[in-house]
Image 1 (tube, one colour):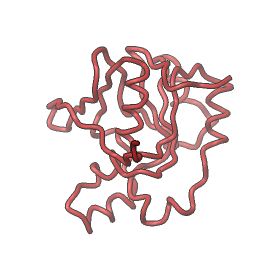
Image 2 (cartoon, rainbow, N blue to C red; image 1 turned 60 degrees about the horizontal axis):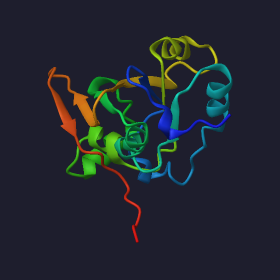
Image 3 (cartoon, rainbow, N blue to C red; image 1 turned 30 degrees about the vertical axis):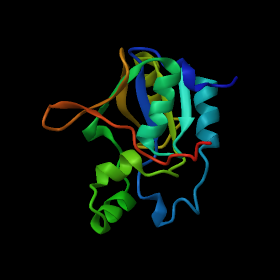
Amino acid sequence: KPIRRSGARVGDMILVTGTLGGSLLGKHLHFEPRLREALILNKNFTIHAMIDISDGLTADLNHILEESHVGAILYEDQIPVSEAAVKMAEKSENTPLYHALSDGEDYELLFTLSKGQAKKVMESSLFEKGMINCIGEITRGRGIQMKFSDDKTRRIKPRGYEHLKS
């Protein structure tokens, strides 16, 4: 059955496949769509909302949040930053975390589900260890907040690829 962007619920956990950021160093040309993982998730777990990360983590998460009428909190230390994002940061004025949050064309899956189902996904032998990470949770309200390693929580702006609007 199809999984829409509009099904995220307050209390859901936010999970992501793979690592994020730096796709312009080559991944965007040689990516493997997460079709297998999406089918396994859909068949074996109760997913509330899902999207692929093509515009950037925070931009695509914001699509889920707007269509589900909820907010989110992300945990800085749980974001799976790719080695390519680290390399991009060496050549830019931005941090590896910035690239993981806003670079597009990662083509990883971003999805929400209940805490119980998230625990089952994380413990499942259906995926390689480290393939799926829990990066936050769905909250009441609107927008995206980030809990940083200094224990401070701040609102962050969704960033990523912006499609031309007519």
